[in-house]
Amino acid sequence: MSNVVIVTGGSRGIGAATCQLVAKAGNIVCVNYVSNIAAANDVVCAIEGEGGKAFCVKGDVGNNDDVIAMFKAADEYGTLTGLVNNAGIVDVKSRVDNFSPQRLERMMRVNVLGSFYCAREATLRMSNKYGGKGGSIVNITSAAATIGGAGQYVDYAASKGAIDTFTTGFAREVAQEGIRVNAVRPGIIDTQIHASGGEPDRLEKLVSTVPMKRAGTAMEVAQAIGWLLSDAASYVTGTTIDVTGGR
Image (cartoon, rainbow, N blue to C red):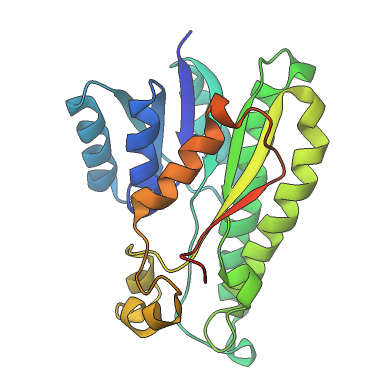
């Protein structure tokens, strides 16, 4: 059967670039999206236009039932060999003393629980413990996890710190079951996520803090993800690759 790779939040930015790269490597790509079906269809069309195979599935990774349905849909296309836990959210700039319970619940549900839900479903399919043939999981963390996000979004930074710990522990848990688990830590990357957080000019404000004096591109992050998914990284697990321009 064909190899299937699921990319959560695959309709834009790093997710979209990863979908295109993974498809070029010969995989069937599941482009997950939560609301923007037009953007997801654009990614699928771009992949198919270059001779690749892809399909899109709507689902909120922070919803357990949606995650189960997404993985069941992917089962119809082949054998799951890769998962990229890319879906994530930010919120508007705020201090901790102004965080609402609703904001915190949403942040942790999507950014943390979503990765756990997806990892669980992937393990049930990949692990040799369950008759699987192995695979690779890549979690997307953030340089915010090491910097802390003070005065901006400590909640987002904390959620990505959780992903750092999750990557280390989960990798060791399934290392003997044929599953490699790694992470990519993007820094200042030119994507729409900054506008989503109410700061469309954030890149211009922070690029001077990057030793390379420029923002990274979504494809530069996707290249690291693609390598970790590939057999070229067959002896790499529990590792986080910084794609931060030295920041």
